[in-house]
Image (cartoon, rainbow, N blue to C red; front, side, top):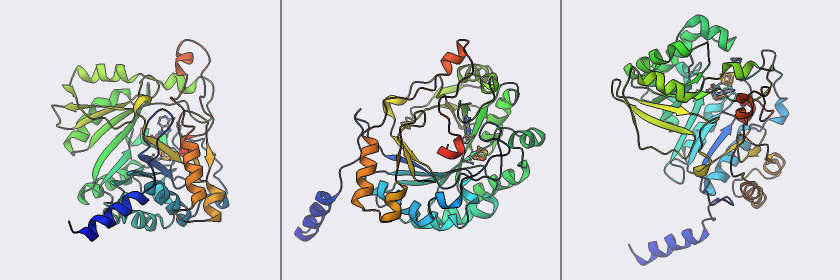
Length: 354
Ligand code: SAM
Ligand code: SF4
């Protein structure tokens, strides 16, 4: 390396802001950014059927969301997941992917999204073009009738078509399936095999006590993933995989299908020690922990100065990370111990972004 290049490298290293590290020594490297609270589905575990969405003026513009995401990348975030609500129903959302996709390889390691899949038929190819390589698609049942009842407004076939389009576009797909007692527990083995046949990974998720609940409902839907793993293990060889995402997932390699099977057990799993993530809602509220109410609004700051290197924005982000709780406390164990069903945090998943 010549002297000039070495000096330039040194200067840029000196200018790079310090990474985000919380008081418990955990480095924040993963941002989940919700771009809308709106959705074309009304999944019963996620939002009420007659949900009132936020007034548009409260929601950050695509340019403001872009500035927030860039600010995090500047501060060392290397993985960015776009979520919602349903991120792909937001008008012109592709322009946000195209803009942020430009950061992949220079600071950003991965740009990805979580979607219900309904719009993938038309968007899979442009998403790949924007730099997305992996998508998480939520699919809890392969039965059209059950799918309709669960999502209330959704239809299974467009999602299946969207998944086929994603595969054809060379997007790596992971299916997320929420396990619901007495609803889809008889389909879980089929789901694993169905995913294996398509080269999709699958992750099972415990129902979480978020949002408004009718007393007793969420608890009655709860089935522990330890039990799910035990049942699947009667039919499949699940070998623990050496894969730490810094998140709540535990992965197994399924010898029969050749795919990975993950389990996200926020209720019973202990995973906060390695937590590397924070969330920003579509209104610009930064939540350092999904299961706690600690929060910091970035909205007025980014509206006053919608640039990624705004010192006020950086200070607000650092201030919130400095208050990242040591761990979540969904407290379902109280409910499981016999107390009333509990809501750990009052916001719905579509507000915080799943
Ligand atoms: N609309 C997109 C989707 O459904 O994938 C992204 C947003 S959604 C809120 C993100 C994830 O949260 C989905 O996988 C959904 O199944 C999950 N989810 C929503 N409410 C939940 C709850 N109460 N417990 C567990 N998972 C939940
Ligand atoms: Fe929409 Fe996703 Fe919530 Fe279902 S889980 S209502 S698809 S945001």
